Image (tube, rainbow, N blue to C red; front, side, top):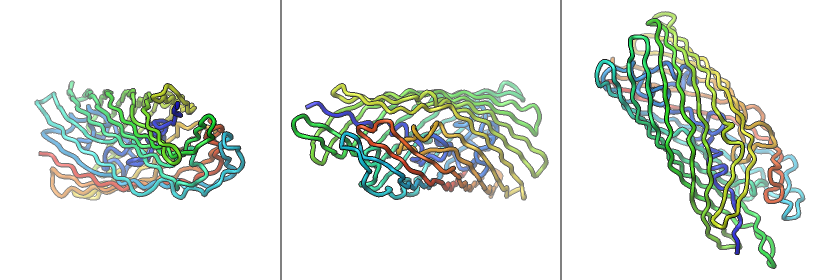
Length: 423
């Protein structure tokens, strides 16, 4: 018997928006430290206040003399609550109004997102370092019998990124840096499938898909400091092509095992940042970033029997703008604040998948930094993400998924802690 195709990496690599539970628009995780959280990550490519600059701009390592370690964790709690407004069953099952509930809060519970970095000054000009983080991630889980169960029930995606880097101080004004990234993705995707069996009937088994992939990318950056109180940064992180493979199982009425694969090109990013110290107490930070989400116009998944399916996304390139300010209360204490606007790659309600009910969002952030000693720093930050009302009217495949129509009420909270030490 030929086995049906079940999209599995589609949202797996497509929903990488909330696992570490993505708080950035799309499925990107900006939260690669907690020290920048209080500023909504404004100035990320220019600030270089600890070793986490390895991810945001490796050239920033030249601002860190000696050896530096930094480690932290962000706890992310998004909320996606759906309200139905006319969803239908797959037409292969006769269509008609969809049965089932609204799925509960699809975002689940708190998700931890750890990070760790080490930088080392080799001499007056050369610096090396390595970082660990999770730049993409998602976890969404609906109640099993909800109206959109043929679109998705669960997505659980985890990423791991190891980023060795090197920086060179050209002179007192200019520094450059570069790094390579080894990235791993592990994804689980569960949904109800529509499977016609000749001379028997149509089955709706529970489809569980597990995929994984390893891939390589690279990043470069530079900092320019024309004055002691002003620094600019530019950073570019390459696209990464993943060739994911895994297994597919169908249960409940069918007992089928198969293999599957999917290719997806995760987007590149470009960041321009600025840092300026107005006085002994005030600092201003700014960020403009671009993400090339149009690298994912669609996703095509092929199973071991040669059957394929397509999810039409039409992702668009996006922009993010952030502003932040710091106030130095004393030598030991600093207060942080930030504001950002983050554009979603989802173009409209017709192409909004249940696995990624994403929309434009606004960040409001606060933080505090404490320096118990000259060479150690503790950062604590909080951000609240306001997501505009989100409509969905997904008709990508009414034959096997049905129409998913309704509204999402969404928001997110992020708490973060980072400890940094120079020695």
